[in-house]
Each structure stands twice: as structure tokens, then as C-alpha cells.
Amino acid sequence: MTTQDCFLGFSSDRIVRSLLQITGILIIVHLINLVLGGPSWQIERLFALGEEANIPTWFSSTLWAINALAAYRCSKLIQTKNIKFLWILIALGFLAFSIDETAMIHENVFEVMSRVLPHGFRAGLLARFKATNWPIFASPFLVLTLAWLVITFRRLLKGSHTAAKFLFLGFSTVVLGGYGLEMITNFLNHDELQWVWDIENVFEESMEMIGAIVILSGLLIHSQFLEQNQKSGQNFIPQSKSKAGHLV
Image (cartoon, rainbow, N blue to C red):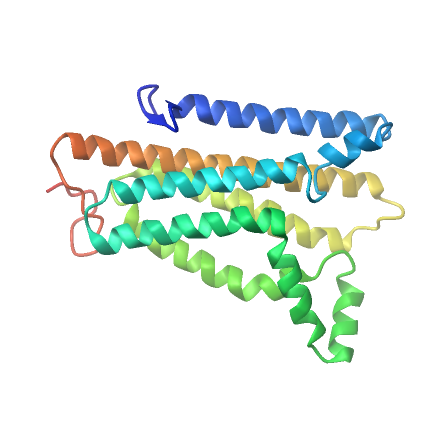
């Protein structure tokens, strides 16, 4: 990205740096409160990573909302209707992530799903996954969503290799933090290894926020790629029938 590339009235580089700085501040405040043993319940309530309805949650929600705007920006730079539709669909997905951060939709939906299971199966599941069991029910949806994203972004990002790398890294970081580490919490002994739980919590939330910012970087890089082609009077067609990276 160059400093001339603007988004929301600011340079793209400045936006990404500022978001990373805010993420760092939130992590530092959480760690300071943790090291001091939580001397203030007000700080714990407002800044604890992993808690709901506080400043880190609002910030995470804002990150996905910004990603939705960045994806929509890409759709505005595309003339092909089906490609434009895919970008709008992705923007709506990011918006759904933003809403989910504050509304806790996926936790509640999969909790309801777990209640309709036979009692014996549910009891056995809960015995193995004491901390959280929503990732088990989310697994099929996650696999399908990731497969769709890989296929779709391979089509949308042809010729924009740097953006593709950022998006791959960003989604991998989010999934590893929000899903992988969430699963690991079920196998931690909270009574004897609380410090491990605390470390896991920091990494999980940090990876989700940083991953969302890396995704934003990829989207901004791609939008700049589209703008450059638009200014040069060329129409980039990311379709399977055209050659990869072909400018017509």
C-alpha cells in the first residue's frame, strides 16, 4: 500500500497502523490488570479480553464493520455483475461477523442446537468439552465457509497476489485464534493451570483482532490494485474463463 491510497478519509497505511496500535493498547491494559491481580473491577469490566459487552468486544465488532466497508469498496470498483455480487456477499458476511461480536449469535445458536441432542450424547459431549462446546457444532459450517472463501477469493483476487497472501494469513490467524484456541480451553485444568488459561485467553483474543486487521490490509491492497487498473483504463476480469492476471 502507498500513502496515497485513501480509505474513510485517511491513508490506508495510517488506518492499519492506528488499528494495530489500539489493539496493542487493549492487550497491554489487560496484561497490566492481570499482573496486578485485578485491583479495579471497573478496569476488569471494561478492558478484560475474552469478556463480552466491553471495549475489546466493541473494537472487534468495529474491525469487522470496517472490513465490510472495505469489501463493499471493492465491489464498487468492479463492473462485472456476478463479481460485484460476490464482493457484496462477502461484505454482508463481514457485517454479520460484526453483529455477532456484540450479539453473541453463534454461541447462542449452537447452544440451542446442543439442547435438542439426546441427553446421553449431550452429557458425554459436555463431559469432554466443559469450557465451550459450540466449536463442535460449528465445525461443519466452518469447513463449508472456508471452502467457499478459498474458491471465491481465488476467483476474485487473480492478479492481486499480495492481497491474496494477506487475506490467507488473516483468515488463518482468525480461525486459529477464534476456533483452534477456543477448542484447547476444554483441555485445560482451570483449577491448577489458571495462568495457562489466562495466557490462552490473551492469545485467542489478540489473534482474532490482529487477523481481522491483516484481512483489512489485504482488502485495501486489492482495492488499490483495482483502482490502478481502473485509472489506466483497463478492466480486470477475475473470471475463470480469462487467464490469471490478464488485463483486457
